[in-house]
Image (cartoon, rainbow, N blue to C red; front, side, top):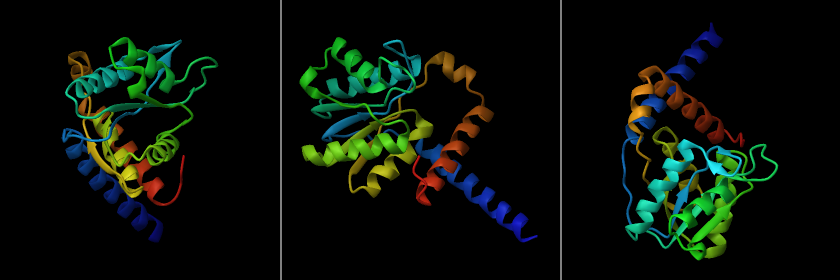
Length: 194
């Protein structure tokens, strides 16, 4: 009986949190900051995946609007023996006109929490206090809260979905992605860093 009650409460909490995340996933509050932080995603043999490419293209737009003097890319190897998400992202940004000296790379993180811990260290060493997070909408709530807990001012600018994605991402799939982020965020709040 007690276990069922606890499970019901946990499910209700996670559902409410996922709804809050869903509301924030569509909000773009980008404004002037010290750095644009692009969360990593898969790369394929030195080329960004379609998701990562759209995140990077969005970061280039923000950079060209002069919202920040730096762009930081994140993400480790993810099983690739040659390339990292952060390194591939750096090359992509430079190829699109972002000066090499304006690109900062975090390329050791194997998860959101690890990448953000590493990024926070780099921010502190460079005296950076604010950032614009670029990621998928379902991801920005968790990233924002983790960085805020580290003492940074955080704005979010989720990348837009491509028309083909908008059609293929069902309401169920979107809810599942948000619920997964709610679970990951809750585990992080409980001290489980992965």
